[in-house]
Length: 189
Image 1 (cartoon, rainbow, N blue to C red):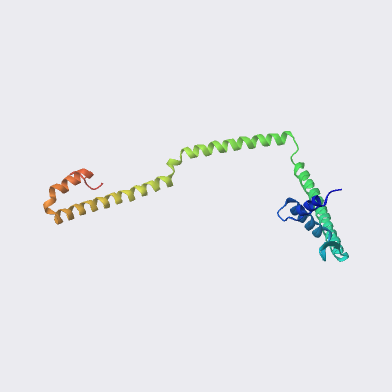
Image 2 (cartoon, rainbow, N blue to C red):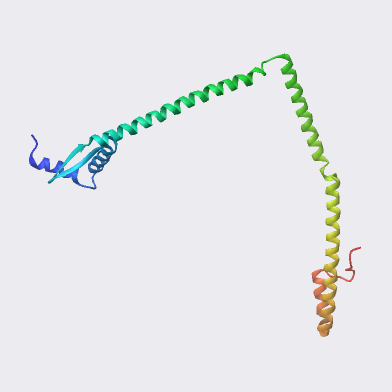
């Protein structure tokens, strides 16, 4: 028989809130309450556990409803399975292996291969596409007008610098040569 000290240690181990034993006890106690309709009643300093018939009846109703729902889901799944099997069999009916089917499949593969080769050939001639060529011509015209506009801006800037700073003419000509503006700098034709 254990001594009173060891009994107290065991009790205190169960009652300490941070201990693993207390957490396990609380988890078991909570699951008992939720599952079986067991309720805790405090009588003085003792805890007594009791269950009420009404709670058990509610639990029974809940279990019966869950069972009925699962049964209906199972029957629906069985019906769906039968429908899918029938649908699969219907699809297989026209696909039996025969010489006619095999020749049709070979012809289909040949047509797909020919289609792929034609697409590759079309991709090779994509640069000669009339719409792409027309778009490139339009882009060339836009770039040409933009280059002439910039050239005009450069000549305007040169004229403004020459009139504003007449004493720095040699320095301006040296700067123009450094940035690539030479005497043969002209508009694009």
